[in-house]
Length: 267
Image: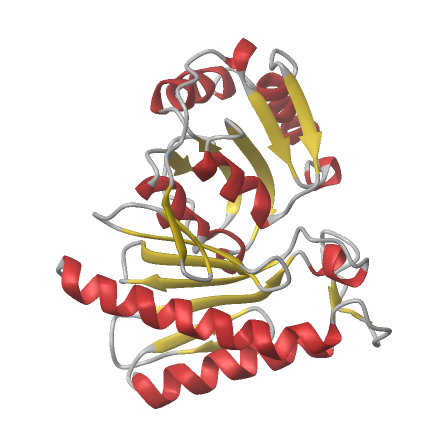
């Protein structure tokens, strides 16, 4: 796909994310039922807002691109006849959502069969959107305001700010050792944030996100945003992390390389 085609898909993803936000907001900071989908990571909440948002996104895709595949957290996978697949997390950070906190967002990615090439993160309550696509620039939007995003230079882990959503994601001794290897020498470590950890890398406020146990819909929308801002997102060995699992995101490619070397010594 050329840049013009990707831009069309990017704007379509933005429009879907805004529409999903409109379906979500009536439920935010309201008393709603919460179902526990409990999985291997423990408590995994879902609400009517998650499902309503994914319904909105799926309906839009089926109208505009009926041959495309869809993979969403709440309603599973539908294989299309096209190699293109939309990957959806209608509310990334549902735990924050049900607490009335701000660290959640709508995630929409377009995967071309090799890797995600379009990514959008939208926080409807705050009203801000982060977007990126292969070969383009990352951007922040709020209403009519626009700003190009760039990661910051930080080549040394001793100068870095590291984030992860929940230390309990690191369940095995090897995973816990990996978290320690990346975070112990850092300037400081912060917990919490879900998708916002990654947007803060793209904004240049955070240097590293390290996580484990992610699903494809947790990470695919975030990859094009960080990469378009100048950062790197891989698994812990430097490979493609679009199918989830362990993830290492860095704003500075030199820091990413140094952390991969550090992680290679953990076993």
